[in-house]
Amino acid sequence: MSHAIQIQDLTVSYNRHPAVHHLSGEFAPGSLTAVVGPNGAGKSTLLKTIAGVLRPAQGHVVRAGIRPRDIAYLPQQAEIDRRFPISILDVVSSGHWHRRGLFRGLRPPDMDRAVEALAAVGLTGFQNRVIGSLSAGQFQRVLFARMLLQDAPVILLDEPFNAIDARTTADLLRVVHRWHGESRTVVAVLHDLEQVRHNFPQTLLMARREIAWGPTDATLSARNLLRARAMAESWDDNAPVCEQGFENG
Image (cartoon, rainbow, N blue to C red; front, side):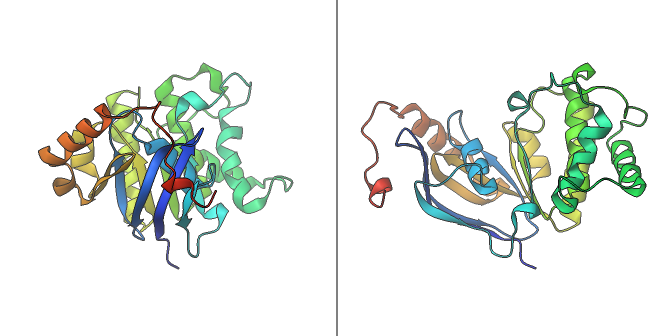
């Protein structure tokens, strides 16, 4: 089954001002791609649109052969409320819901797989702790364990290594490389360009529009990075709306 994701003249807007502007390209099946760019470049907006959280103002995201349950989406930690007193094992076990449904009870083998997923991210023995007791890095490990259970062919990660320690980052990067080795399509929003250069063979550099998209070394050239910075400095959020992007709206 193909798990390509095609972006066709995509514009996504807030209050009719584009956050992603006429973007086209493809995340190839089994590819490992970083999405980078200045703050406000539309990176998170793009991921949310691919995941189906946001609707385009214009254009399309074509997910040929990809069902909603085939996409595992990890938002930024700041968007997740950790005050609810739920155990780590319950959070990880929720990764089964995509395939078993909300109202079907989990079997002992399902719980065993959840414990194995925790072990895979270095949290053996943590299953009975509540999520509010964890550090940012530990909680990110929990979220990765849940994604292991989702077993999705498409993985979307929004700033997965932000504000976590170097050891946790290295451990979770190994999980990302495991997914890539299993021919899953992985797209990650990142800000550390050296991390991208060492771990992600493909990169989309955007500043609301595409600056470059392709092999990482070529995409992250000094010239392209300068173009992205210059474009960001020219943004005017009080400018008139993009009428081209709303000609059908």
